[in-house]
Length: 133
Image 1 (cartoon, one colour):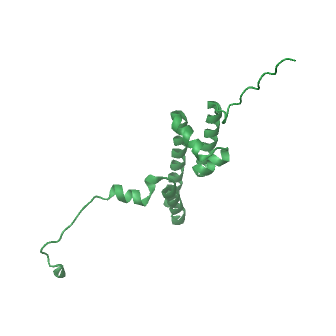
Image 2 (cartoon, rainbow, N blue to C red; image 1 turned 45 degrees about the vertical axis):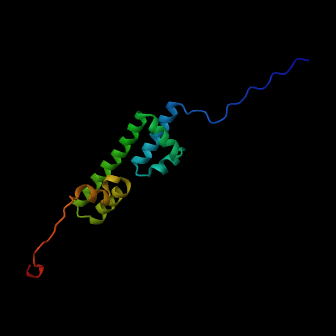
Image 3 (cartoon, rainbow, N blue to C red; image 1 turned 90 degrees about the vertical axis):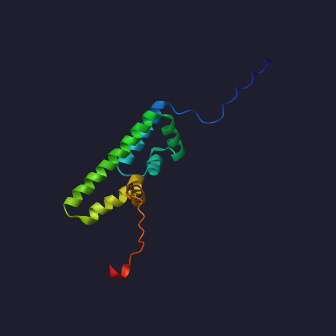
């Protein structure tokens, strides 16, 4: 009897995702982002976890550029829609878009604006009788 050859050892872990598959998944995520869905939910809809998506974007500047473009397009669309509603007098409508922008994009948050736009001024009233003002 011939000796049996040992079975080849299996490699542990998952196979690396090919670049074209990554790109298609990121494009699917971007399509969802452009519709207004959160990054996390868009990733889940495309079948990728948030840590994996972050890893792919960190590793590939081209994919990151596609992702950033999708976010910028969403931001531009929301600003345009808010602007259009503000000119029609629809206060609730444009405020809704402003609220969405504040929650979605850090640079639109009130706290960030207060920190960046407010100059640090200290006023001391010395020797002034405030009761005469």
